Amino acid sequence: MDKDAERKIGLIHSLAGLALGIFSGRYLDGPNFNLLNVLLLGFVVSYPLMLLSKRLFNLSEKEFGLKDWLAKGYFLFFVVWIVVWTFLYNLR
Image 1 (cartoon, rainbow, N blue to C red):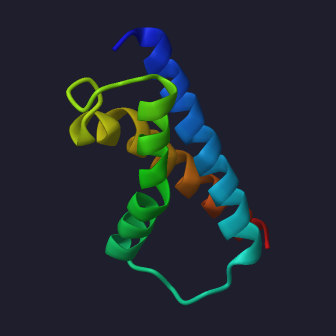
Image 2: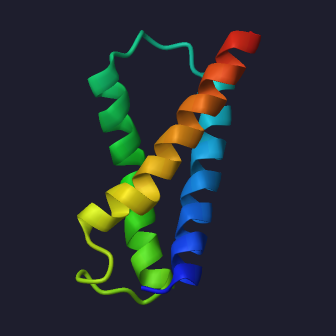
C-alpha cells in the first residue's frame, strides 16, 4: 500500500473520530463506561470504516488486514474520538 492511500485512510478515520467525538460529547449522557466498553464501542463503530477503506482504495486482505487497520485506522479514530469527547464533555 502506498503512502498516499495510508494518509487518506488516516484522514477518513480521523474525521469519523471527530464526528463521533462531537456527537458523544454533546449529546450522550448515558451511563459511565469503563475502558473495555469504550474500546469495544470504538471498535464496533469504526469497523465499517475498514471495509469502506478496502473498497475505496481497492485493497486486498493481504495489503490491509486487521493488524494494519488497528495501527493505521483504528488508533487514529480512537485517539481523535477520545480527545474531542473529553474536551466537549468538560465544556458542559
